[in-house]
Image 1: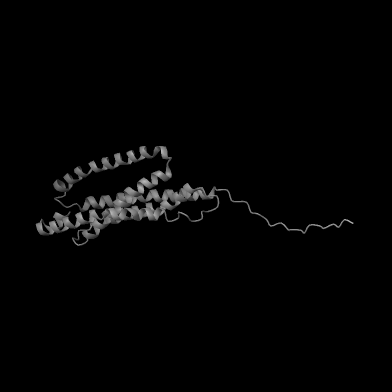
Image 2: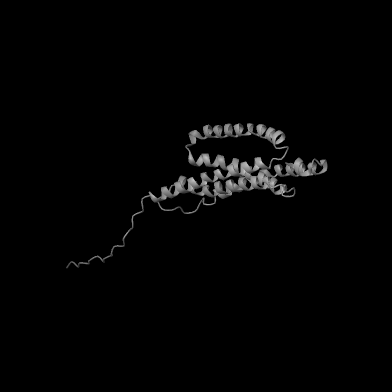
Length: 202
C-alpha cells in the first residue's frame, strides 16, 4: 500500500516504514487500556441478584464493541488511498491489535470455566495462524491481479469487519436475558412495632 501511494519513492517509503515501526513499539502502552475498561465496575455495588461473573460479562460488552470499532476504522482508513492518512492507520492498527489480544484472554477467563482456558487460548491462536496464512494469497492477488493496488482487498476486509459487531451484540442480548430471568429480591415490609405491655406485680 505504501509503495503504491508513494510511487516507489524510497525516501517516503523509508519515512512511513519507520513511523510504522515506532507505532509498533508503542503497542505495549495500549494494552492496559482495555483492562481498565473491563475492570471499570470492579468494587462497585452490583445489581441485586447479579453474580460476579454476570457483572464481568456485562462489563466486557463495551470492550468488545470498542475492539470491533477499532478494527473497522483501521480497515476503512487503510482502504482510503491518501498517504498522510496512513499515520492514523498505523495508530489504529496498534491500538486495535492490543485491544484484540488482551481482550480475548480476558473474555475467555470470564465466559468459560478456568479449566478450559488453555484450550480456548490454543484454539484462538490456531485461528489467528490460519488467518495469517491468507496473507500470502492476498499479496499474490494484489501484486498480480490488482497491479499493486490493495484498495479492493481492504474494502472486502472492511465489509468482513462489520461481522465482528455480532459478538458484542450477542453478549449484550445475553446479559439482557439473564437480567430478565433473574429472580427479583423480596420486598421487606416494615411491621408496626408495638410497645411491650408492662404489668405491675403487687
